[in-house]
Amino acid sequence: MPGLTVNGIAIDDTFAEAFDMRATAIVITAPTERWAVQAATTMTGFATSVIACGCEASVESVLSPQQTPDGRPGVRVLMFAVSTTELQKQLQNRVGQCVLTSPGSACYAGLDSGEDKLKLGDAIRFFGDGWQIAKRLGARRYWRVPVMDGEFVCESITYLTKKAVGGGNLIIMGESSTKTLDATEVAVKAMHGVADVIMPFPGGIARSGSKVGSKYKGASASTNDLYCPTLKGAVDSALSPEIASVLEIVIDGLTSDAVAEAMRAGLAAIIELGPQRGALRVGAGNYGGKLGRHHYHLKDLLR
Amino acid sequence: MSPLTFSLREAPAQRLDLSPLIAQNLAGKTVAEIERIEVGTTRVRVAVGDIFRVREGDPDSILIEGGVERFDRVGLGMGSGSLHVEGEVGVEAGRLMSGGQLTIRGNAGPFAGSGMKGGTLDIEGDAGERLGGPLSGETVGMSGGVLHVRGDAGERAGDRLRRGFILIEGRAGAYAGSRMIAGTLAIGGEAGDLPGYLMGRGTILLGRGASLFSPSFGDCGEHDLVAAQLLANYIAQVSAQLATLFRGPLRRLAGDLAALGKGEILLPRP
Image (cartoon, rainbow over all chains, first blue to last red; front, side, top):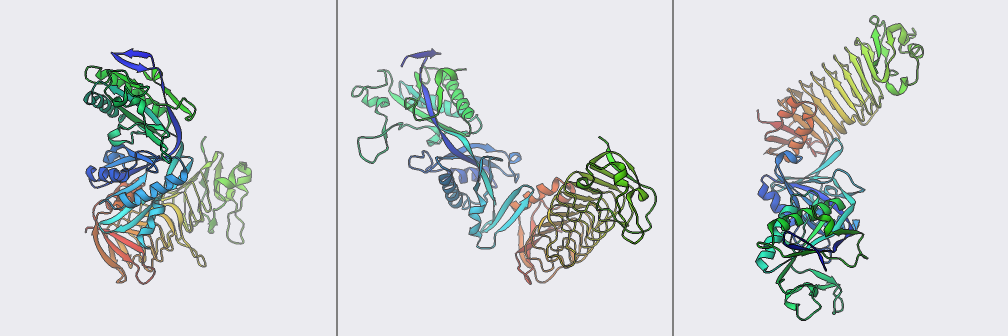
């Protein structure tokens, strides 16, 4: 896959293929940042891929007390799913089991508008067993649910967007697992500086990139053998001999522009790190361009 | 465009019903037509032109220069625009208003904001009894909007309040928040006897307590409530001074347990 070489790093002449998704955002606050992050981390556990988790979710940003509705430290969480029904189900279950239960937490809408509404507190309020209190402040409505450490405050609804995109990606290839991981981590860090995107895999990184289908009946996805370095000599590998490790960053964004911006930031960071300390080559995953509406060509994303 | 202005010629000889002087009623009318609108309440006919000098202007911005206690029903049913009264008004100012901004630069009589559904009513002086409350035969009082009194309020402020905010910077008379259905009533000064009398739901914030509390409220102790911060932030948009009273820990009294009992009185430390 011939492409460009920038700062000694080969950039494949290829594109990432991404899909339309439904997405929402919430803001979680707590008495301390540690507990806001804890609630969000718990809520977004097992939310790496819609293939088996129901949704993809992660912390988008940490918010200062000045940025939250109640003046406490907080985090903004983004959540993506393939349908409104699934997104509602996942939101309700995850907030109910992971945020409601977390000490001192409160939960608010993370989107101020959207094509549709999702129940947030309206779904959780029944936990109050009749002692819940609704409070409307201007255009917003909150539920106060009595809990054992005080009250769980939860905004009644949040919004969803149908303009979200899931599956933007970069495939980072290097001569050792250490250097490949270093380059990928640098890219993830740069992407965290972009608003409205998450990288839902562990630490933002997936090491088990998949292809569609499997030789086994019932498995919808299986290992991407063309990018497995230990199979270089056994399959029609996409890897040249010097590549010993491959990692992938998957990006979900509230808009297509946000996904492109994150990929651009990640690429720039990898290039800046250079081949001596980081990656030798960067590619992207696609399905021939026939499945996903959004195509992000790497050559267009070089600053 | 300058406001449509009504300048008081002399104090009226009878009580006036000024409810016709709202934007949705005056739009498209000439000054001559406006001057012919009848505002009397007795057998002696009184038209706008008899009482006011009318200056042409934007009906979405109405200014009444001069006010007297006989100006009843100012801004009744207004749905948009602004209406400023440079003086005192009588009963039912802003009653049933659903939007817009009504400002009274003086005192208001009983039933100010009665049954209001939206918009903002700002009373710079004192308000009479039954602020926001229903008239006889009605079951529900104020059900939306913000009612702000910079002075004191009379008895039964917020009677049958259902939704919206009543903010009183001064003191309130007896039975503040009586029979409240829901909503929020905040009082900066001391309230009279028995605040929250027979309230079902809703929140009463008392910045300086009350002269007598009902025994039918249960003390739930002192708490740092997240909801109180949200309330204070919202109140601060109208009155930073009032909001400050409710930023610290608040004692929560649940009640009225003689009624539904799902309301609350919140009190800062004395």
